[in-house]
Amino acid sequence: MRTLLRSVFALLLVALQGVLLHFVGGGAFSLALPLAVVVYLGLQDENVEGLLGAVVVGYLMDASSGGPRGLLVFLAVVVFLLARLAGATVHLGGRRGFALLTGALALVFGLVAFLFTRYVSPPEAVPGARLLVRILVEAILTGAASPAVMWAMERIDGIFEKDEPGLLR
Amino acid sequence: MRQLLERYRDLILVALLLVLPLGVYLAHAKEPTELNAVDRVVLAITHPLEKVVAWTVTGALETWRGYVALRGAHTEAARLRRELGTVEREREALAQVHAENDRLRSLLGFAQSGPDLAVVGARVIGIQLDPKGALQLLTLDRGAVNGVAPTMPVVTADGVVGRVHSVFRGTSDVLLLVDRNSSVAVRIERSRARANVRGLSLPDVCRLDYVLRSEDVIEGDALVTSGTDGIFPRGLKVGRVTRVKRGSYGLYQTAEVIPAVNVTHLEEVLVITSRDRRDEAAPAARVP
Image (tube, rainbow over all chains, first blue to last red; front, side, top):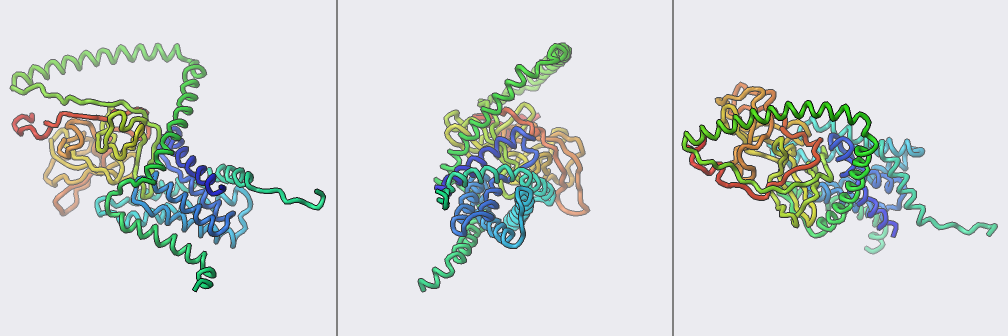
């Protein structure tokens, strides 16, 4: 049930992102908000449940991107693993740490996607190096917006938290 | 065996979830992707959501513009009246040029065969100018029920926006001219040289390809659709040439192009649902 609700939230984020980018800046910059969900799963969730959640979010991003399927699912799993690794090795205190990690992973996400796209594209359609600036801006903005996603994910998780009966009950 | 599987369950799952999508991607990356049933369900859910959010935001903005932001409207109206007078004079001048053009056409024996375009107006409800592998798309609030179909040209009064990429019942996605997968056959308006405009996945610049070295192209040249690609009608504005690059060898020269339509400011567009296909197919003698 929790995974389903998280998936619905990710779906809502994909839709919101499209509208938000249209009204704020008209698409002059881009965002990868659903990636913050994957980072959250990497830090908070169990291995199997988190991995499946990352796959669902990656698939939603893939479906809305219009590009060839699979790349964003693969990258969502990579981001999940990196977030897990970061959570285990570095202390990420609060929303600021989450924003920093999401920004850094969004940059990795963008750069790896860029390299793969360069690798598979025909010579006349290879994306140019000028896109790197946009990827950097996307990473910064995604990191800046990620605390809001974290807050929403915490509210969703709060629904499923059960009170443990204490000694005084 | 079972113990081994249970022991390394997570590792196996990770390996599978990494290898499988990557394999699917590498297998399909070089071919255009068709939407499968699951994709269609996902998009069928996100598009109405986008519509609702866009409607809410538009409503709030219009309320603001209509009631709160009316301060200074009187001054604005006076300025607009003055501008209207100027535009009216320009319109009259243009009407005279048009009439003169008609007379010259008659003299030369040309038939009055202006393209008879059927269009559908659409509002932009979402935009995606993703710098990564994704396509640069606009989401419109018109779809199959409104007569929109894949590959139909999408334009504004300023020029070419792109072409319809995927169509759903009430919405559609438009592949923008600036996407690196977009390619439009064009003519240089001044010299009539043929070329190709290709997107770079940047919102404000495209590339001019396949212009022979011997052709006359200079900075500031206007580009219009040639109609030879079978998608766009002839004569639509595409952009303006900047930074011509002519290497010391090679058959072609290239240039950068500033698109005629700034996709980051789009609110409404027109989808051309039918057009006069005579365009370039007409005998060469008829082309002035």
